[in-house]
Amino acid sequence: MSSREDRQNNSFPLGLMASIAIALLGIGAVVGWWSSRQLAPKSATFAPTSREPIASPSPQISPTVIPKTKTLTVYWLKVTPEKTTLSPAPVTVQKDTSKDSNLKLALIALLEIPNNPDYSTALPPGTKLLGLKTDKEGIHLNFSQEFAQGEGPNGLMGRLGQVVYTATSQDPQAKVWINVEGKPLELLGQGDGLMVEQPITRKSFQENYQL
Image (cartoon, rainbow, N blue to C red; front, side):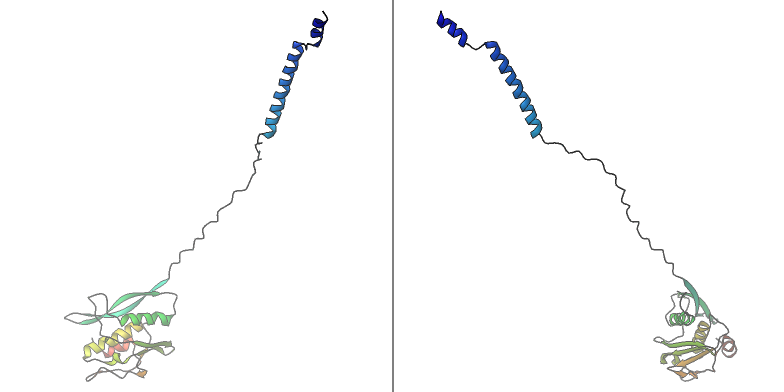
């Protein structure tokens, strides 16, 4: 009998062991959950920030510059079987230039060939305007030697008229003085040339020369 009692005294209650096992399982679960929470990456939380919108710079627009122009007049020859006449034609130049500069541009245009086929010119090819000056005495012009060349009274009178009328397009009452290579013009053309008395005005041209 004593051995049976010893076995009963030494045996560990099964209920108590089950309770301990359940408790250990519970503790393990808690420890596992806590460990997973510690090891899991924490998501960062950012508070929204308010920023003022960056204004893009407005493009710089340059104002449109409208060039100021002025219309002057040059005189070409219009030749018909009946007669030869001086015919005005417009020339556009910059308005902000001086009076002398405007007049110079008009006379330089006169030395070119007219664009209109109805017009012609009596100015010899290669003629150059060497100088221009205006003062209280009138308009002083200096041409290259080509200006004085040529023959035929009609062509020479037409040439003189073209220059005088174009030079006085801004002031029809002005006096015109013409030099060739720096010397006063006395005879225009070779042979039976045209005698020139200076100064010349529109009025004196109409009185002394007939186209």
